[in-house]
Amino acid sequence: MRAVRVLLVAVLAAAAVTTTHAGAASSPYAPLDRPGPPLSVPAATLRAALHCEGDFRHGTLEPVLLSPGTSATPEQNFSWNYERAFTAQHRPWCDLTMPFHTLGDIQVAGEYLVYGIRTMHKLAGRRVAVLGHSQGGMSMRWALRFWPDTRAMVDDIIGMAPDNHGTTAGGGCQEGTTKCVPANWQQAAGSKFIAALNSRTETFRGISYTNVFTHTDEEVQPSDTAATASASLHTGAGAVTNVATQDICPTDGYEHNLMGTVDPVTYALVMDALSHRGPAVPSHVPASVCTEVYQPGIDPANPQNYLQPVQLLPSIVGILTPGFNLVGAPETSAEPALRCYVFARGC
Image 1 (cartoon, rainbow, N blue to C red):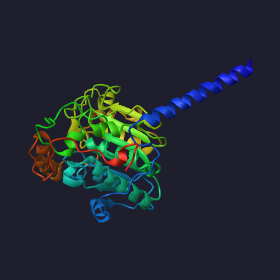
Image 2: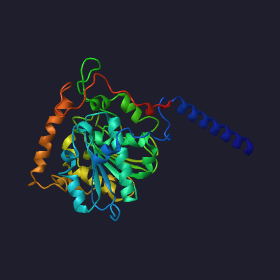
Image 3: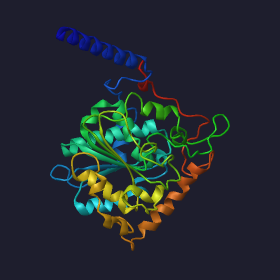
Image 4: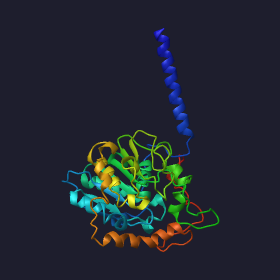
């Protein structure tokens, strides 16, 4: 009888392996372990886009790569909040300036992130964290998905209002009838880019994922529950926390843009994720955070608090007004084609 059971288990295991291999073989997307392609962006351009501060070799705090949101430069997104806070902590950090104020092809932005991760890992000699807002909280996952060598270099992925599954909020882009910047096409729920980003798996073993979202998000939707929010990740072997700021402070009212730049609740979750192994643990955040108005790093008397958001306005026009932008981003009448490395057939 025991021999029969052993044989049955072996048969079932073989069937499971066969089914898994068949499913993988039928996927149109690249295998998870296929080496990434050479970077197409010139090395000099990538070097010029990466700006770093702090002691990477001797510092004890986890280094952080900052990835800006759609339409933003790192100065507009992070210079007056997170970068000030990290500098005060003596935490080494880098930021990346993406082409066209992050309105261009996110596949190209992914190459900048590959370069940033590799360079920071080499500087520090240890794994790093990537912290991003909006598109910047999602786009680093393109690097992890299609350049497998970067996975061993990253400890934490932290997204503030990330659109991991695109957004249903709409942007007025209608294929064949309007022209939009590439990042608008690609961040729509159901885009080819989003399908490729989440192909085969969403997370990877050894990496911690913290996805913070807000129920008041007017740009990345849905944002109602951790089970359905665009920000949330569910599949794969990574350790994941999906949390709304209202799970910590029910009356937290900061919307999409302010939650990634000002909100003390988001900041507390970010810092918890950086302070220990694994993703953020919401129960670690004290209730006193709910009485705070803004996060550490922000000086209310600093004029940059107001100048940087104002300087962002011309870029935002490129998101809200199809066919019209003020930062020179290219516009197309359809979503940019996926690169050949995305597919199982390869290049």
